[in-house]
Amino acid sequence: MKKTFKFFLVIFLIILILLAYDNKDKIYVFYRDNILKVKDNITIERNAYFKDNDYLYVQNTNNFISKNYNDTLNIIYSIINSGVSSFTFYCDINYNSCIQDVESILDNEYILSTINNYVHPYNSFDVINTRYDKYGKITLSIIKAYTEKEINLIEDKVNEIINNYINSSMNDEKKIKIIHDYIINNAHYDTSLEKLKYSKADDVLVYKRGICSSYTDAMSIFLNKFNINNYKIASEDHIWNLVYLNNNWLHLDLTWDDPVSEDGKDVLDYSYYLITTDKLKEEDSSKSHKFNKDFYLELKES
Image (cartoon, rainbow, N blue to C red; front, side, top):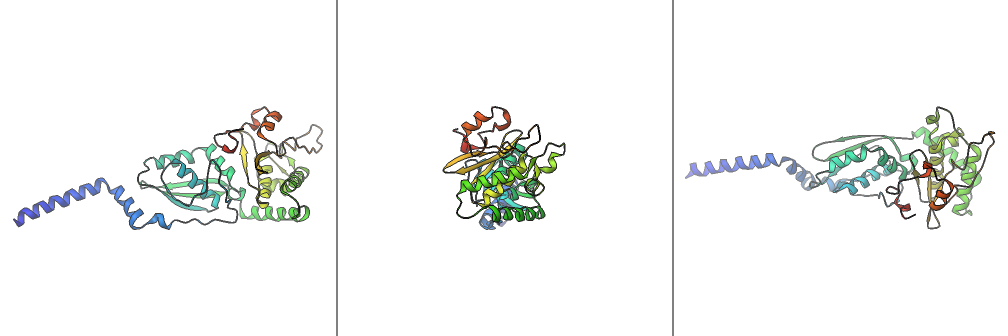
């Protein structure tokens, strides 16, 4: 009788070992999520440039166990928006396509640049490196577009401009107009072959030359200082600002309001100053302002 019991016990243990081996991945994930309770201990630090704004395309989240594609998109946005340099999140045990979805987002330059457009310029990235394992542990390492030295230089200039030209009695539209005019009157669009060297906010604010990305970043930094909801909007070859003012999303394009004239004279224009999407189409029928409404959903009905 004892021999029979021992025999069946051995068989039972062998079956358990085989089952455990076949399901070791799920057992590990169950242990991680329910015994170690990793998901209950995930918090993210947010720096001073975090934007507490949700948009139709991406929203901030405190849930870092992804269950679907939309969760993954929001997690990646939240990580970049927070300003951290490295962060780890996880796939839910039943989210079988999680790693595939992470790769599809991080390998898609258009999606990544769109996410970058929603965050503060100082938190925008230059490079994102990714590590993950087969259990759904994903770590993003972020190299920022702006260095601390560049941020300090810009902040000194921005505060100087605000102190000299802005006061608390002004409404938001007045503040925007003053900054719009200041940047255009004090910067020139760079037409050299080295234009990629002049792509950041410090180029137009400090060095007084830049391309569309530098105009747009500079304006965005001021808008965020004024607590005016905004993000950057892009076509295939151009970028400009979108501003939420008086319950409307309006286009603001400083680059095209600072045209390059044939005689080299400075020009200050208002053709692209806080205009609707319909007006934008009237002003420019080319592809330069043709944006993808599947990404900039606030304008989908326009």
